[in-house]
Length: 557
Image (cartoon, rainbow, N blue to C red; front, top):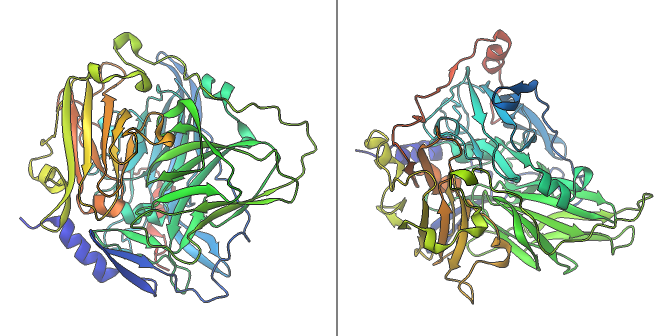
């Protein structure tokens, strides 16, 4: 059988136009495609000249209380939109409600949500010549498989799907993004990404809120001369652009008060990794990881972040005088391709504050609150111990026949099995140890395991063999650097008794994922909550929405 993803990549390379100045950088793992934008000098953005902006917060269409408790209902439309990213030109993006990042959704723990997502995108995605199908994954949520963004659970143009999210987990920064098989990289790169904040009383009481609780969606991009997105990935390595975006703005400047700010940092890049540091050399306080607050607050000079990882950090601006400018820099990592300004992320400018002085005390420890479903055997992730494990598995990422694989297998093997092939089948609430091994030496992988929160109990590359200081909380994405092995302790906490089924695990270098670097596991009954059949997308029945996708303009214009 010819691997379908290989033919897709062939189609990609024939259909896409690299934005001029394209570089092929040879590493031990293959060629890295990197693009310097083809913009004229007058259209090339200059760092720290454009003001920072926050994504809008999405308001519910309906809310109430039923026999199961509080609920909220939201509506989103995936559609094309115009964005002012570079001076003098507009860029067509594909976004939730036509914007990038999409609207932030903010929900309180224990409030169930239904998010109705209409695919009003064009019938042909001009980045690849295929129908603009989508799949939405709420990354970090313990969702049922049919609402988890299973890669083959497509919503085609003109269709709609309502995703149901339980929101029982402790407060955390999640994000929702496209997960369509074979198209994830270009769909996320085009703009289908946004944050989702799960709030609880414990993070509300201990960390900055409202104006001082700020989402940062960090990504990279390249532009063609007309301002359109430039993109040509390589399945062996990935794709990196020369412009850094924060919330869709190139290298923004943010005015900050002399206060302590909480930043929710999401790396929404498809291949690039980051290493953040302040230009002043002052510490960055790590207060949250993928799974929410960390039990201990760690002050670090810098921290490393791969695609899809989330870190919540505190920066204390109280010591600076009004007018002081501080850079958030990118020190970069191995096997990134760096351009003239990819060492910059954003700039903070301290402004005077007429209000009372900020008396917030940066904590040294945090109270994460009670563990939901402890009565069923759930254990708070940071309190898991190796003695609780009932199984140990080894997942090795490696090249096989020119493709990145997991234990020598790809998503094509899963498809060929009728979606029944699994790497393991733990029972709900089982605890396991997974060794994630990257012995290739030529590339890093952000490795994501759906459903679970995990505790890193070993990392072979640190002096003490333990997790980095910034990894001191629950994780669902694991940075596997060159020749790194991470040992993760996890529990398959499914929530109520109806949960379970098949879930994906894959590389979050999205070009690798689209090249089939993905397999699956099952929790409980393999056929419970069939991810493609239990609640599939349906035809859009509202005339206004159906008309939207039919008249959409091409993405590449």
